[in-house]
Image (cartoon, rainbow, N blue to C red; front, side, top):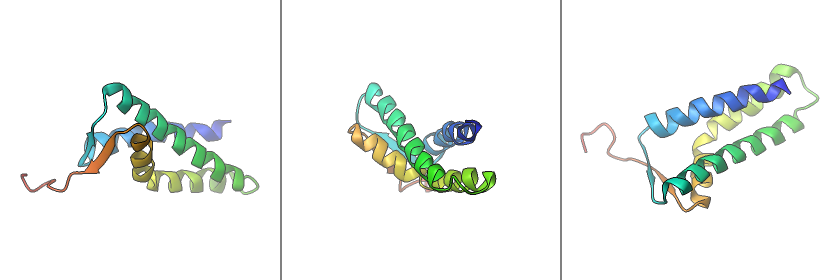
Length: 101
């Protein structure tokens, strides 16, 4: 059960950095839809992590936790786009980042 602690705690840290610190814009939808998009992203992240964790269940602890976590962290922008889009909210990369636009 402690296997789940690492990806859950990493998600909240990384989603805050991705949405708050990266040049992305959350467009459209009310605040409620945006929060539901965040919850949908979290659910998608955990489902994919859980499936990968189950597939690698017979391997060592490091492989069983590290591989699904790395895959899900790398796919976080995709999960964010899908999770928010289901709620009718777009997450777009801001093209003019760093150019003064």
